[in-house]
Length: 159
Length: 159
Image (cartoon, chains in turn cyan, purple):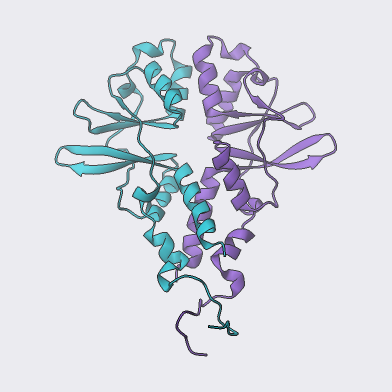
């Protein structure tokens, strides 16, 4: 087949158009492993955990391992300024708690999740699975994951 | 012209292909306003500034307003754990300093800048202009900006 004026060979099927490519990007394809702490650990231990795992957001779970809260670096920085004894304050005092947590599901479109990160002005969403009594945390979706997705578009589409 | 097997008409000029669209995205089209502190302010004041402007990264400048350092929430959180008197420590003690700062220019491609955010594992790049004696800070490029760029692709390309 020879190139013809007005057409160019994309090297891809119509289903691989960028709109379709983006609509087919799912949360589960880009999510990271979640880092979780129990709601009775201290703020001091949560900060240590954050540095240990080098993440910007921790998810807090109750004793049944259901999602109970979210802790950002900003929350922990605020707490560390306000208090002299971080080892004595449990994280459930300072965390953002249900039902105020913005989350996503692993089969949702990455575009929807990215919209949620921007609209809620947050750095990370817990990826959750709904169960009868609460949400299990199965992943972590951050702006780093979206940045990687952005780069993958340029790599996929580089001719 | 009729569609032919192995080819399809993209409905866009070659210049509007996603690769070209992405290559044409420049840092200056997506950057945010930088938040800057002087290198002699205290860690306490820097943290206050970070909350006041609701940013995750501060850029530190010397008395000639040239870029001298970068302060992330992580740097400030580490400092706040380690010290009892944050008002007595100047930020130049804890900042990441030149020449270890990763930066970008406003006319650079967003793809290159995004690669740098991922490879260096940082949240923000100062957008700088080189001058004879140093770098002036003219912007701030973060993973939030890249997330917005990602969404703009889906909006531009929605058919």
